[in-house]
Image (cartoon, rainbow, N blue to C red; front, side, top):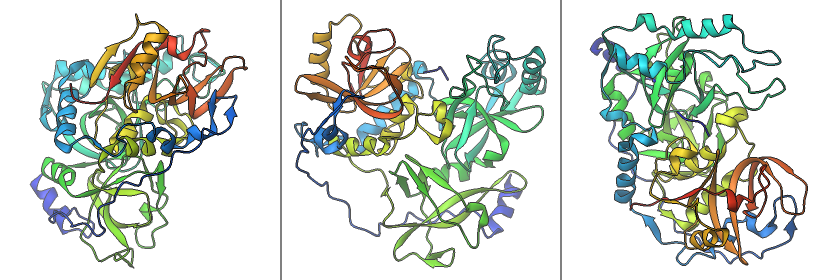
Length: 468
């Protein structure tokens, strides 16, 4: 993958019907879940297109191969230590948002704003035509470096919807080839609804904001963010919360808050709990009450209460991280459409891994080359295929396997062959034609890459997601 933003006002907001509240954490309404054991599914029928078997599409197939599938892999304290290490390593390109400077010098801001260069490369396409100098100039001018002051305040905000994080303050798509419509190289990532960010700078036209998310820096449409003061920004992150486990969770239309209509929550989204006996004129004896973010006309944050039915696929706080729970989590993405940087509402290779772990509170970097630096990382580039498979066979599921430009989620070894789940354009099972997957699939590591070598041969490094 790729490498990569007033006391008076607060008083007014607190008087509004939709303002942020800071009640004490809400107690659980349902008993803690108990891990479900399951008999190992049969291996099933062979799938030529993926070089795997039907039974391998069931996470419990892989859980049955684990020595202790329901044993906690990392406690909450251990996960916090893992996250702290990720945020402290400058090579991960992650940032501890709460420890981030509250002002930036002109030089620091200019360096951040020009991380990707002054404008898109002249060899890139915007549809069927090469990008023009006029388009390049317009993008550079919109970066608005002339507005940088000697000292620039860093503001706090939340994403009010799932939002594209882009390389430049422009929605102009940038492709490698004239016929490409799937890889907008200016699309860096996607912010989840409620994701906290820091706003570093604004574009000349005011339509874009340069933000720092915990694992990336980029430009976001201003309408996708709501500004708030640091006190409320931190308080909302500290509230009791639900975390979305489903790939997508769509809310129904709201009678009283039409702005919530069409809201889609994606895997790993954290929803602050609300202390409410009803939301949208429906009771909460059979649902959780949560807060959803809204952007006021002046660009500041307000909230609305909403219901999440008990039957929806969410967890009260972070669930325990076990082999079985992690496998079941990543398999919720099986079959989802590939989406570079979140295009088409899909998942790319590294976001699949990051979102599966995010449900458990584990923070991973954005890109594959950075993810493989986390935890216990091992360089496998000099290993033979046999030695690689032996090494991988000793790892628990969920190890991150990196090949050039691609990240995979390790599942395990079955009948002497290794298997992964990954979001991929495609591969070539041995003896079969090339398969265009463009989705999340389970495949054998014996399948071939475009260079004619197997996935196993191409694996350069592995990261065991645990504390050293």
